[in-house]
Amino acid sequence: MNLLREYIRALLTEDPMGFVHDLAAASGDFGEDFFGGDPGKGGGKAIKRAFNANADHQFLSTLDTVHWVEDAYSLEPLVGKSKDELSTTMTLPGDKLKNPAGLLIGLWVKGRITIAANDHDQLFTGTWHDYVGSHAGYTDEEQEQRQRSSGINKLPHVSKDYSRYGQLKRGDEFAEKMAKNTPYVLDQSTWHQADWSNTNEALVDNWKPMGIVVGKWVDKIKLNVRSLEDERFKDQSGVNQPGVIGKIFKLAVEFGVPIFDRDRNELWSSR
Image (cartoon, rainbow, N blue to C red; front, side, top):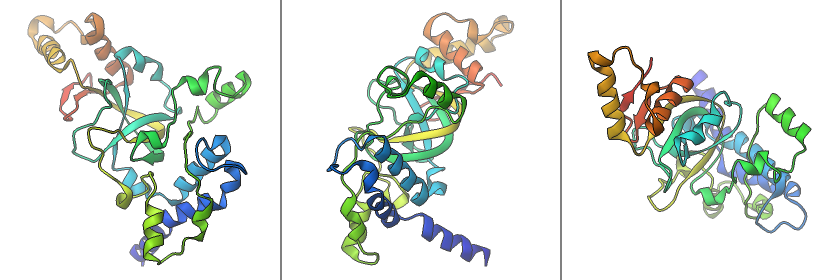
């Protein structure tokens, strides 16, 4: 009986048709003259509400999510900021961790995916300055309240017009295909494996760090690890190394996580 209830619950909650129906019902949140483009704050929040209500969160929890940045120093502001929502890539369990072009170090995190798309251009969540700087659209007092309470959350800044999707009928083969033909990753059936020419994106909330992932400096880190394991260096720490390599070791200590390469091999751990 419990298995039957779980199956029924899954059918009701993992539902691309329910997702587009919810978006159609919330079309007023996108604005009267919305025909596609930036849905505004109201529309962005409506997309995330519909996603939360209809996504297969059990499947999403199996994906590995990494927040990639340009250099090690860009990860430092994230220490202790686990309530702030992060943009990440998604990778299936066991696959090589994919990094966007030009981004060679990332923070592997685990948390709740609040929205996900097969192509990051279909979310266009913006840079961090869009949420904390002069372009954020919040007063200083509102920003302080957001940081104190649930953290700073991000929103999709692009969408098409879903107002007519409420006319799609369940059980109709064409309508069901239309409902699944959105850029969003709601469940396994709407997951499209990203190739090397594009990058997927998920927003992850209430996360915890799992590891530092490096797409470069692997050999240098291994060399430092061998030195640390040598008896002559037993009284030293990797965090005392100079430059970017030392910064990576320091970050691993500050986050309390191991260092991995993109093939998921553990390179070093302070634990």
